Length: 350
Image (cartoon, rainbow, N blue to C red; front, side, top):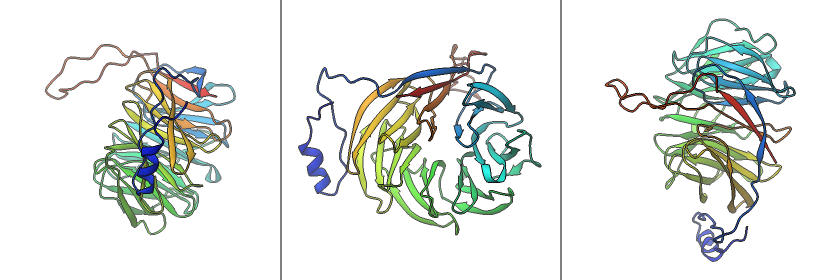
């Protein structure tokens, strides 16, 4: 796709400000950078949140209501289920310890499970309010359970599950990333910030505003160029220099995003947009230049995303929607109903 707006972004960069989105010529079309490779039918009932790829075990873990579905990536078959995870949000594995961790937002706990048997290890661990995203940081050998309410996030020893501390992040946390050298980056949804966290001391090292981005959710990271990619609820992707906090670029993305990944093999940033039913694909031409290269059709509700670092395939999940229930005093803005038996995983590749 040709770029018709070179002068303004260049001037903006020279002035130290962020470059705005590049607009393709009217009538220009480009082939979709990714296409649907397979659909894994799972069925059942309930909502969903994060997916997590375990490349060492060749498994995909998928949150689903009150349980986690385990998919074999070589056969594309469901090979197991981890039950009793009410309000499940995220799943993270620690292969060296042979265990995995699951955040359960409905009862403020973390379930620990055995990677071989998928059986629970001990009793659920109490966490901060509304545990949501989580991350295993190999540098500190810790699992961070990020709370989406109240700012207090629980930190565990990755090998034992022992609580080793609490990080006060002063905000509602969404997706994290790690530089692998002792620093974590986290989106703060209610304050529209991205922060840097010391993985050992648990101190907040810096806070950077994401305006004009609002309510950031998904977070991608490129350690080579020190770039953070915050996908925001107001249909903007904000690119930030992780070292300085300087805002590098702001680009348009689809509606209802809740996930973002960066693929170093292609230089692509991909956001998953549940309301639009698309992936927005943005290419990193250089550390200071980005452009939207395509919108890939997915499905309504496919708002989260996971990337397999081996195959570079992308995974998302959704189900069919039924009618919206009538509003009640307890639920004045009800969500559409989910058609039972239609839950599925979608796999995309180039």
